Length: 196
Image (tube, rainbow, N blue to C red; front, side):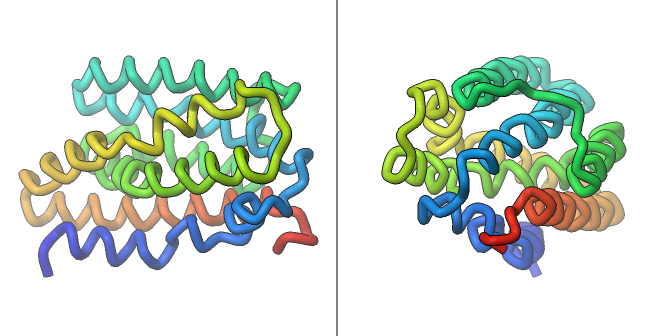
């Protein structure tokens, strides 16, 4: 099986668009308090993303990710909160998983792909949910507006993954699966009982 097909088979098992948290968001049934907690907690993971690109010696994309942290901070601020340290156990594990995988160039590629390949579709879904169902300040939108059309990072990662040796590709595939599960579990921990 081609590498992209292997990666996408892993991601499809943990497709975040199928998660009850994002489905409730899209339907407008996710309470604003849950959005607020998500902004605060998940932001701790968003802050880790530049490190995954720095270990690739990709200063340009790392800088872009740092700018995206500012957009996430605006999202949190519009919800009257701010990025904090992760408190939920599965979000803490997500942050720890990211730190571990982003410390190695090979595993960072797989872990970043798990997140970046899903980002345009999840950002578009979240943006539509915000615009359709929630009366919130405009500051909640820019992060998702930028990422709804941002496909170049996943494409860049795939090119780098394809250049790896077979052994390193296997490590990257394992990292992709680890990150997919950690992302899913973090959302599960943030999902209110009535939306689960």
